[in-house]
Image (cartoon, rainbow over all chains, first blue to last red; front, side, top):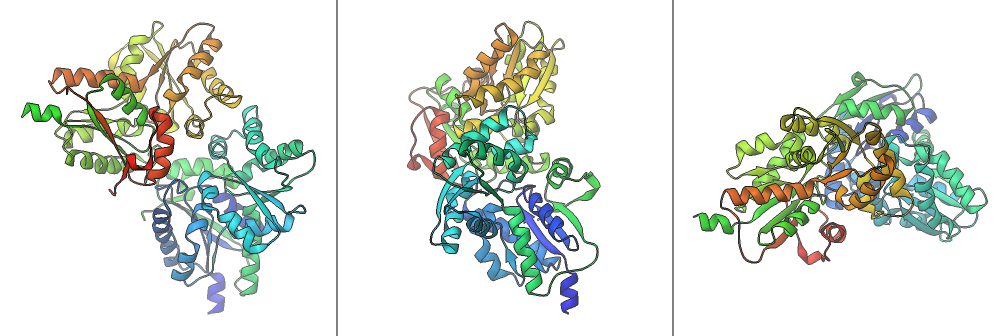
Length: 273
Length: 273
C-alpha cells in the first residue's frame, strides 16, 4: 500500500500558467516525482474574484486531481492558497501544501533586520495572507506589502530586460526599500522570472544586498520535507503531465518560457471541469 | 407601443469595467437615454478565453439584459464584438451594436494615407476582427496591428502619467509609426484614458499629427444614428444603472476613474448570472 502511495503522482494546480514556476522548482528539487499540472486557464485569473468564487473554482480543480489518485496536492496559486487551504484540507484525504506558508517561513528565516517586504498582486496583498502567515511564524517580524499589478503582464509579454522593466520594478521596490526591509518575498508565481532584475534593483536602491525569497523554491523545499517525513518520496525517473481547461496552444507557447524547456501543443491536454 | 419602446433602457455590457468608457461616451452623446451597464466581473477578462467560452458568457449577459426589456444592446467589449455578434443578432429581438464596426469605420473615415494602425489586446489582434471589418468598409486601406498587453494594467493601476507610461506607449507605437500609419484606432475600451498620451507620443514619433480614433466615441455616434433612424430616441432626463457579477466594492472604486464621476458602493448592484 505504501509502495503504491509512493508511486502515485503529485498534483499541482494554478489558475493559469504562473504555477509552472512552482512545477519547475519541484522538478529541479525532486526529479524522481511524477507531477500532474492543472492550469484552470478557462477561468484565469482568480486574483480579481471574490473568496466565494475562488473557493468554488479551487474545489473543482482539487477534485479533478484527487480523482487521478494524487498522493499530495500543491496549490501553486497565491490566491487559492490565501483563501481555500482550510477547505481543501478538510475535504481531501491527501496532504495539501500552499505557496504562502513556505514563502512566509523562508522570508522569516532570511531576514536579519526583522523587516520583510512582500511583492504580490493586488488580490494577494488585499487578502493579508502573508502578514498573517508571517505573524504565525515569528512574533518579531514587521511586514511591508506592495501590490505590483504590472509585473504579471510584463512577464507574460516576455519583457524581462530593456528599458521598461527596471523602471516598473524600481517604482514598486522604492516603497519597500524606503521602509528598510532587508528581505523581499516574491508573493506571485510569475515573479521568479523577474527575480534577477528585482535582486539587482533592490540592492541598488538599498545600497546593500537584499534577500529575494522565491516562494516557488521554498515550496519545493517544504514539499521534499513532507514527502520524506511521510515516507512518500518516489525513486526512478519522474515526469510532468500538463492539463489546461482552455487554449492549450497559447499555454504551450508561454509555458515553455516558464518551465525553461520547449513544449509543443501535443504536450498539453485540454480538459473540461 | 413605439412610445413604450422609446422609453425602454439601452443595455450595455462588458466583461468588466473597460466598457464604462463606452457608457461614458454614450452618456455624453445621448444624455436623455437610460443605460443599464452590466460588467461580468466574475469572469473577466474574456480576452484570454476561447471563442466557444466567450460566446457562452456573452449569451448569459445578453439574456439578462434582454429580460430587463432593453430596446437596444451595445456590446462594449472588443472580445465579444469580435466573436459573438452574429450569434447575438440571431438570438435577440433588438438591434445589437458592437464596438469594432464603429471603430473600424471611423478609422477608415479619418485616414488620408489609407494606412490604419490598430492598438489592442493580444486577443483582439489575434481575432483579426479589425482588419476584417476595415476590409469590409474600404478596399483601399492597409491595416497594421500591434498587441499592447501592458496598457490595461497601466490604466487599472491609474498610471496615466509619470516616467513609465510614455516609455511603454512609445514601445508599442514605434512598430505602427514605422509602418507609416496616419491613423490609430484604440481597439480596447481601456485605452481612451491613455488617449492624450498616445496622441502626443504618436505625433512625436511620426513628426506629424496622427489621428487617434476612440472607438467608444465612434460607437456612441453610431448608436445615436440607429436610435434616430428607428425612431427609438428618448427625451427627458437619462440615467445609468450599474450591475456587476462579482466584487462591487472594487468596481465602484475604479469605475469612478473610467466614468469621470464619483461612485460609491451603493451605486453598484451585485447580481448572479
